[in-house]
Image 1: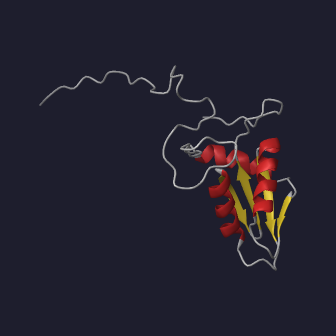
Image 2: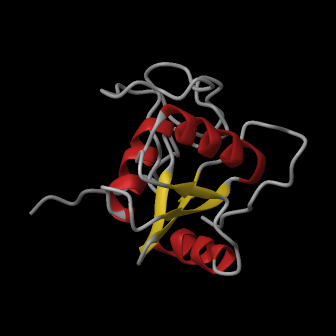
Length: 143
C-alpha cells in the first residue's frame, strides 16, 4: 500500500495574464464568433447557483426582443447582441406565427452570440452574456 501525499493544488488561472478576466478561456469553437469576440473563444459554463440568481433577476423583466414570422434573422441577432452588451440579461419572446419554438430560437441566438440560455418558459427565453463595456453596472455572479 502506497501512501500518496496530496499537495495542495494551485489554481492554473491564478496570476496567468494570458487568461482574460471575463471568464472566457481560449479554445477552439466551431461556430462563428460574435463580432466583439476574438476567434477561438469558448464560454465558461455557469453553475447552478449562478443560473438560479440570473433567473431571479430576469423574472421582472419585460421582453425586449420579439421574434416574429421571419424567425431568427441577422437583424434580430444584432438587436439581441446590442441589448446583451448594454444589459447583459435579455428576455426574448417568440410570437405564435413564428416557425421556431422559443427553445430553438434561444439555442440559435446563444450559439450565434456566445451567450448562455438561462431559462425557456412558454414563448419566452432569457439569455445572458457578460458585457465588455466598462460604463455599465455588471451583474455580479457568485462563484
